[in-house]
Image 1 (tube, rainbow, N blue to C red):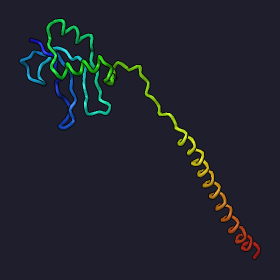
Image 2 (spheres, rainbow, N blue to C red):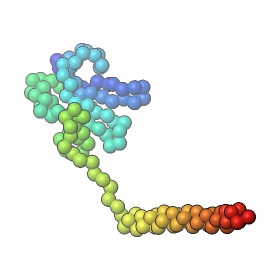
Image 3 (cartoon, one colour):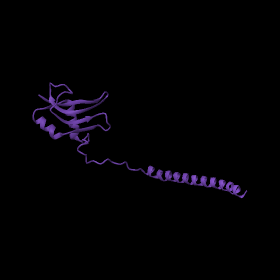
Image 4 (cartoon, rainbow, N blue to C red):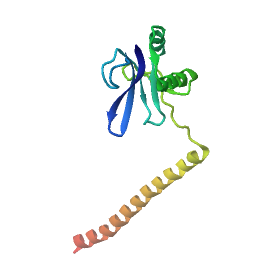
Length: 143
């Protein structure tokens, strides 16, 4: 009998899972027929991608999903999961840039003003040093 279940991968204390179709008698991380998706509960938000067409195909052919996989399928169908496409497919979603609030927008001109005052201070200090050095140079040449 075929089973749709999770296959554990990843490092110690950092698991991620593949959703696979396998014979019920095979070990958890053993031989499988097909990979149907992946699930990484360690990331925030959780990364979950399932190929629902292929899952429906296998269920139609008699494969039984495990309780965990049944819950994940339900999450995906209800739209509660983060549907990240695999990197090889090149997702069409664009990352959202955070919008500036009124407070952060008001704080930026103050930061620019601080930078300008620092530059003016440097120029003033440089002029003062030049003015001090100039009379010493004049006295050296006039002697």
